[in-house]
Amino acid sequence: MIPAATPAPLPRGELRGDGWLRTRTMGSSTASYTIEPGGGAVMAGVLRAETFTMLAARGPSPAFLVLESGRPVPIRIGELDRDGLHFDVARALLEGANGRADGFG
Image (cartoon, rainbow, N blue to C red; front, side):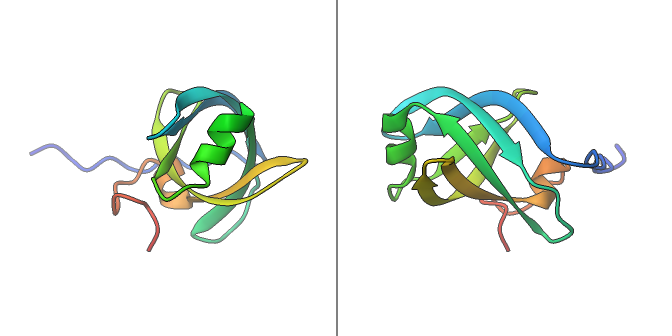
């Protein structure tokens, strides 16, 4: 029997990287992201990508942030403002745990 993987601890401080924002309707575009540290199950972040892709991500279809490591994680989209597109991501998915398909709840 293969032992279950132990989730990797998150580094201290902000998580920053360059990856991709993927949407069903607009495909993907490169994205720079910052995820704020926090102790809860959901962490907040902001990303910057092509404007049309950020607008498409606000639609009803799911959006994914492909991390610099190449790992896709589902994100819950928030507001779009001058700082970029705000989002929430489940801590468990960032740490490598397997959960619900959307990672929330």
